Length: 22
Image (cartoon, rainbow, N blue to C red):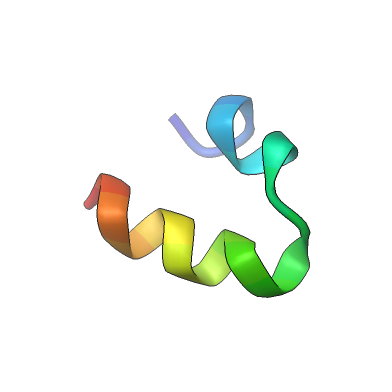
């Protein structure tokens, strides 16, 4: 899943998005 929804968020928000997905 890392790459699809992560592309929508910048590097900073990407860390938070990864936690929400996990």
